[in-house]
Amino acid sequence: MENQKSNSSLKAVVAVLAILLVGSLIYIFKMTSDADTVKTELKSTMTEKELVMKDLEELKSTYDAAISENTSMSDELIQERDKVVNLMADLSKSKGDVASLSKYKTQFVALQSNMKVLMAENETLKKANTSLTSQRDSTVVVLGETKKNVEALTGQNEELSKAVEMGSKLTVLNTRGSAYKLKSSGKQIETDKASRADVLRVNFTIAENAIAKSGAKSYYVQVIDSKNNVLGDKKTETFGQNILTYSFITNVNYENKTIQVSEDLKGKDFAKGTYFINIFDKDQLVSKTSFNLR
Image (cartoon, rainbow, N blue to C red; front, side, top):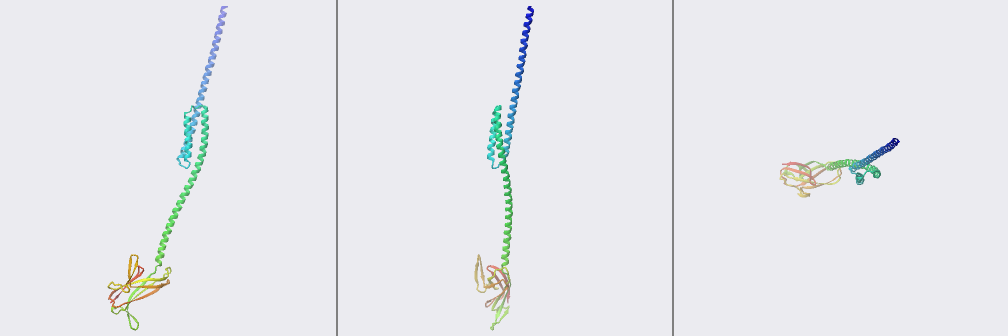
């Protein structure tokens, strides 16, 4: 009887211990499972934080690249880039819990939306600037070509003006000097003897010129004897710094046709030797010749 009681008590103790062991195993399994769940959640949270940080870094890089292009929107881009930098600093300090990460994601999405708008505006400005630069360069090229053409035309006009000016000048040619003896009858006899000469005659021709200005023309005639004396009126005329001493002035009415001019210079006691005749248009020597009296 006593043996049966002892066996019953022993069975009861074993049953209790078995129950306690099973309970302990269940508790240990639950604790281990809960710990693994916590670890998984923490690992997932850390990954989300890193992903948000990576997105922010890419956003910052996009702004940095746009700012380096130095467009008229640089100030606005810098302000937005600074917002991203500040958000990155805040995220770096955060514990990375689900609530804070949700807040950072929301802010990132807002910044990303602003970035897309600003990038679109910046791209439009770049295209406009490229177009303006191209137009400016084309204008510079056209202006350069125009300037060259104007300079070329100016040079041609100057050359043409000079050519017209030179072409419009009258040509004096066939200048000739001679001496004559005057008879009491009025007849004139050419002579080459100084002692017989009463008149020195100057002949020259003004050539036809269709583009020359017609009207009154004056020529200064200078006759110089063998002793280097200017004969005739011996008057002077000043042209700038030049002073001309002349024998007489010949006035003609030029009508663009050839004119034969003949002028006489009366005198006496003409010296033997070579005589020089110079024809001046103002102070410009236009013709000359010489002749001898013996």
